[in-house]
Image 1 (spheres, rainbow, N blue to C red):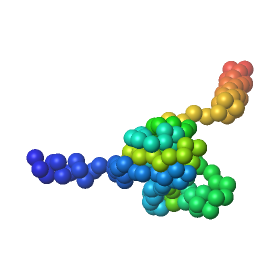
Image 2: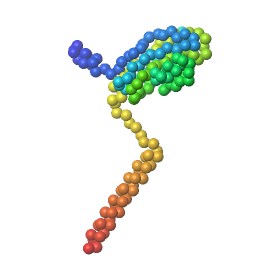
Image 3: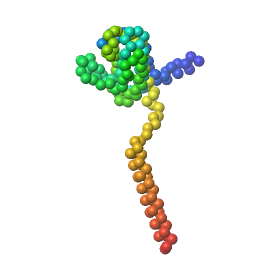
Image 4: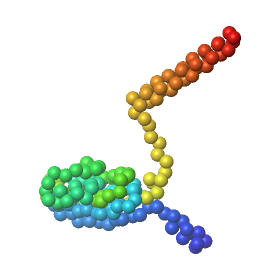
Length: 167
């Protein structure tokens, strides 16, 4: 029984990075490194305010954007929640690189906040099949090309059969 449990544990693809209460001073932010330099993963991040300021924002950013945030320069987030007392993000990182999760208390509340932050990575989520759909323009193009090829083959075959019957 114990070896079976060890095998199940070894095949787990989910890794919990953070599950703790953080104190975020007023007008400041904290971050967690994701460490996705080698392998893509599904990032799951969530927070819930336990006390203090009630308007926090959660973001997933690339490391260079966080460095610009640190310097007070314009920066961008890949995904972000609206300011609130709780939030959740799911993002599939498909390109390896330096990513961070930022919890931000700069929304105007002038008090510190204590929030529970949970961040997990699922490396197996990328291996599941993903169903995708073509854009309507491409769907129409595929349909028109298929009809053209079909009717060309039918016309060619009909001419050959009629020529064979006449001789």
